[in-house]
Length: 133
Image (tube, rainbow, N blue to C red; front, side, top):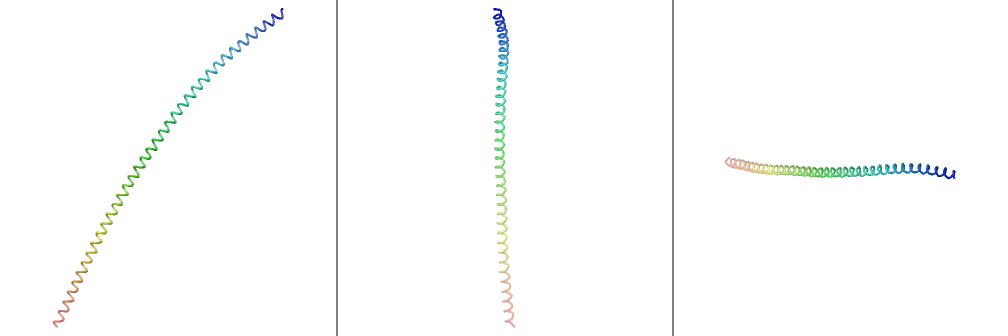
């Protein structure tokens, strides 16, 4: 009987210790679960913030690319207009040079005709003068 009492007392003591350890484990488990939930919430928040930052960066880059393309297009248009103005200027200069050349040629032709007429007149005068002698 005494042995049974001692065993029963030991068993109760052991059960009490197990209950304490179980409660301690349950408390630690609850704390770990809470920490895990907090960590998961923090990770989700961080992921959401990273995703927002990523989307913002993509939007900014798209806007920069759009602006660069627009600027490039404007620059090409400006260069195209400048080139057209230069070509138009060159054509005008060439046309003016052609007109000047044509005038010069006409003037030379007129001068040559005048000279030919004078020479013929001189020749006629000389022939007429010689026939008098």
